[in-house]
Image (tube, rainbow, N blue to C red; front, side):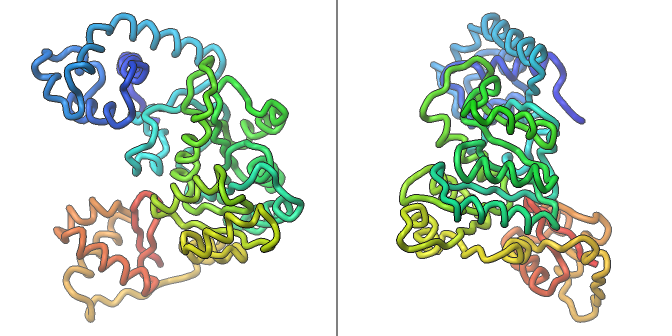
Length: 372
């Protein structure tokens, strides 16, 4: 696993822990200076040219020693307690999150988890889940098990914890995104489930061990749930609440959003019904909805399906795309554009047409591969 050197990690955490330095500024600093360490070491005049860094932020360079001391203390604390640190410099950092500007620059984890699985599904809903909602959640996970997705949720009361427990029961990996520090299981009554999750997935937090838990943590963590999910299913949601926030974020990320329709008389179905009404979510009726939206195949189906490629009736752009994917296996859209010399606008249109023909399949992370 590629990861930064110990010294690079120290300086990255020092930068991350500095006041008023958010993920966007960290990314700008890394892009301009090539590393957090160089930002602290290059001449002030050159550092001042860093995009999004003004005179006030440059003052953090004078705090280098104290920031590095904080970084060392945090690294030691994590090592002693078995917490893992993943920065945007680690290859283990979730590739799905990197696609979004507001993703955290650093996250903490507990457990044995793969952040970059082939398939992920987020399941969220109200904390005051009804019997219908809990039953629907279990059924959704059971039905999706054949596709072996990783189930993403938030460890909260109600639908979230039901999704995690159903995943554990179905032997599916599950990842809990916490609004609390990585050192604190919240709510504490879910501690036993959280321990089981660590064996079959992991716990994730952007909040360092020992920090205080603020009310803004939970709305903020919803963007991580949305970012990690290829598709998001809202099972039950009131007219206002965290589940709807997550759905709105997922919709803004161009994720596939689904909502389970509910009883018109139930306040915990209002949110789902409104998402469907406003066309921000598709109706969830079964696992095929997810599979069709994400072009998933059941085990054995894809290997038996062979696509006969005929280049004789295709234009030169399509031929270049197909030849590249045939050689590469799969590739990101930016790389396809670079190697085929096809502008991104035209390339997107060509790839979409090839998808409709069943020749090309889109993958998470704006990647594509050839079917057959």
